Length: 46
Image (cartoon, rainbow, N blue to C red):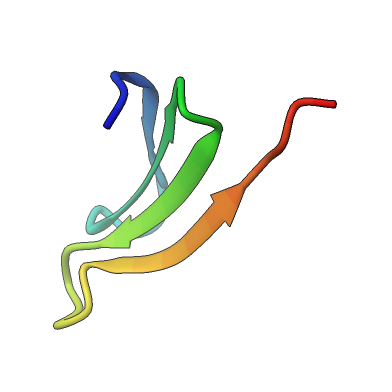
C-alpha cells in the first residue's frame, strides 16, 4: 500500500531479506522457501 523505505539483505543467507515501509510494516522475506513472506510485524505510532 505504501512505499518501501528500506530493504536489507541478511548477509549469511542470500535468500533472506527484510523490508520496512511507510505504512509501519516490517516484513521478513525468504526466497528459498515456498512461503515467501515469512514474518510480518506492524508497529503503531503512538
